[in-house]
Length: 122
Image (tube, rainbow, N blue to C red; front, side):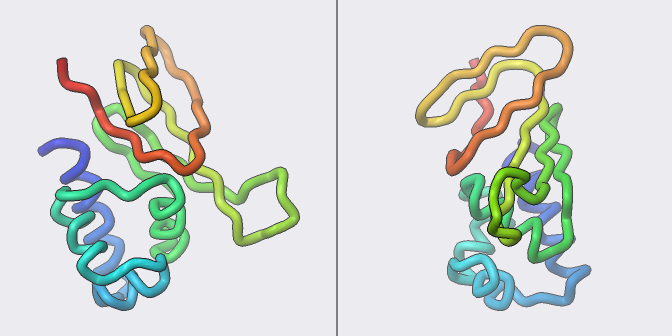
């Protein structure tokens, strides 16, 4: 199971625990129920903003995925208490459409706003 499917399974589990339909969660996040279904199946990956909204809606503060830890916490530098911040802690090599990040042994915390994270398989 890739991290995309693992994330989808965690979203599905959280949705079922919260007793929300695909449509209800989608409405809370600002997308369609079909969009949530695509996340559930691992067919699509939510961007950072959507993942933060999903985490808040489901009461999930952290996702652990294949050596990637995604933490969702209130953004400390804003007066808007609804704004959220994602932090990624990972090792290995990961890419997104705008950057490549290489991490050597150890850990690093990176904050990425508005970008989807995907793992590079080389």
